Image (cartoon, rainbow, N blue to C red; front, side):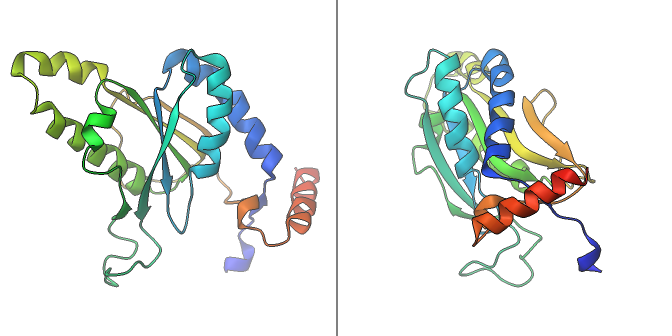
Amino acid sequence: MADQIKYWHVTYNDIHNLIRKSTPQIAKEFNPDLLIAIGSCYNTGFFPARVMRTFLREQTTNKTLQIQAIGLSLYEPVEGATAEQLGNEVIRTQWLGPESGKMLLGKHNLIVDEVDDTRKTLHYALSELQKDVETELLNYPESEREALRAKTQFGIFVVHNKLKPKLAELPSGTPYANFCGLAPLNYPWEATIIEEHDARASSDKKSL
């Protein structure tokens, strides 16, 4: 049955150009101060975040625009996880550190990932980062918290949003940019022989 699933092969250039086309809208409507790349054994937002940074720096006044990384695992086994957790519970493997909330407070924070599958990982990342902000706000007088909370915003960019039922929802109004598609994608960073991968990508495009 698995052999019947069509995986579309995409090249580095395909991903690069997709991000290039998406960036002007993100720069205009969200103007990120910080990129937060989600990494795991299964997916990685590292490459998309690094490419996006190049274009964002050309289109915004933020010339520093740091990339920070968080590690989350949903489908891949990690040390200390149980069989029951696999596929059901998001496990944190790396975070921003003890001062996560301080790093995020007052900024436009863009979460970047490779794929939005069931949305459990994105929902977890956003929820936990927001909790860190709320913890940091406790260090400020109550009279200042609402203004600081309003200045702290989160947006999301994914390369591929799978058009399938989601197991979690994002808060209403969360900025979200993506390429949508039904078919699974086979990414170039998953290939061992890149020439063969690119040849199959060319063949896939001719079959469209």
